[in-house]
Image 1 (cartoon, rainbow, N blue to C red):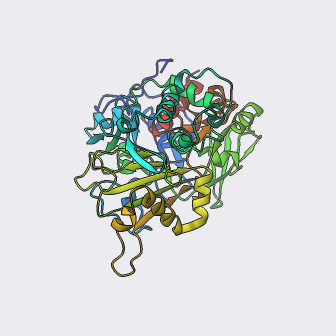
Image 2 (image 1 turned 90 degrees about the vertical axis):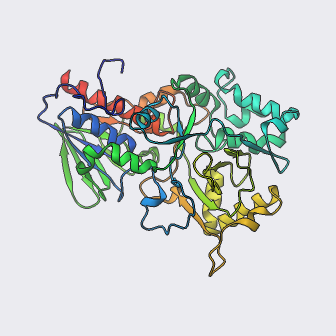
Image 3 (image 1 turned 180 degrees about the vertical axis):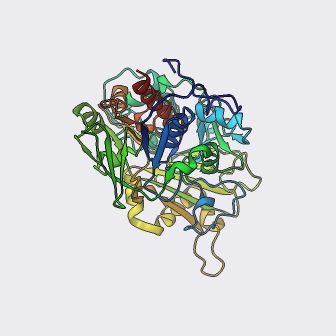
Amino acid sequence: MSAGWVFPQLASCSKEDPGPEIPFEGNVVVIGAGAAGLYAADILNAKGIKVTILEAGNQFGGRVRSLRNQPDLVNISAADFPVELGAEVIYGTDSIWGTSLKNFAVATSALAGSADQYIMDNLAKPYEEWSVDGDFLNAQNFVDNLPSYAGPAVTVEQAASGQSSRVVNLLNSQIGNRYGSFNGVVGIKGVSESMNLIQHNGLPLTLKTNPMQDFLIFRFDAVRDLVKLNTPVTSIDYSGSTVIINDATGGQTEASKVIVTVPLSILKKNGISFSPGLPAPMTSAMSRLGMDHCIRVVIDFKKNFWGESTGFVWGGSSFPDCLNSGYGRSEFNQTLSITINGPKAEELSAQGADMVNTILAELDSIYNGEATLFVRRDLNTNQVLSIIQDWGKEEFIQGGYSYPTASATIADREALAQAIGDKLFFAGEATDFSGNAGTVNGALASAERAAEQVIKSITG
């Protein structure tokens, strides 16, 4: 960090002393036990600061969630590798998240060597086979040149208006859906600006045997006992000399300082009331950032009909972001993990369990009926075996991850990250301005920044 604070918790797995304790008679309350909340608490706890974490839900990890940790879900997946219901890809072998995994010798699998497939004209082919198609090449050049975009502040859809109608779904899957919604609302300048800020190598990884949620819990075991689960915060009053926090259980907690790490959707929908209200620059910044409906659908098949070497399949309508999640992790890589954001997610959510049939029908149209032929079914009921994680219906999350609208800039994320009166601090992926918003890396980077702000407020 630029100010010189050293936070070794994720940088090293050694037993080195984390530095001198900071004398502070007060206490810090962290709202949220996701990646940002756990890491911020871990840093402050290592400095000898008294910390409490209030988590609205019944488990650790926030949007880092794995199937094997969900007792309310029947494990119907035949996969012999972790099935992630939240974050599933780590970007950057040298990123905060990637470095921690490496330091703890956690087995990973590289996705960089996979051969992605791209859908046009209802056909899925690898890059090489499409490379003779002018529309495809124009679309991929558009994606490749996002970091150098110098046009007006418009949506991705408006910026790509000159592209062929054949590549609309393809571009939406590679940009809009990947960045949290769809091309009709995601701002191209915000995406471009973020891409230029990223400092790590961006190489994609998956965990080979350990679910991300398990590693997150293990990594921050030092603060696990400081978490109060099932404690949804309803109001924060920071008008006095201390901060008063009320929760839905009827409890009240007093704190010297508070770090708020809840999802952007909760702040935008006033899930927590603040007294005084949040300052105008912050609420104005929030209006230029969005967080849309998000669904993860996992479907097992008896045969991999999309290609053993395939990493992602891009360009579907009902399945814009489709990961061959067993790639590099299992010889039985017969599982597709599908992430849908934005209006399409809302549309499928309204269908309930029938959304799986919608996805299978589109897969059938592309892969000559093989999806329905090879999908795994319950032997007794003949029902398709699938897992649906509807993040838009999660009470304390209500969406996927933040995205920039057409008018948003990185300054809006900086505004969200500003401390209020040395008492109220903010972390979470939406407040990250290192280019990693929307990812675990962004959440962790924001935690480092918020913890540094707290420490500066104490030490002066």
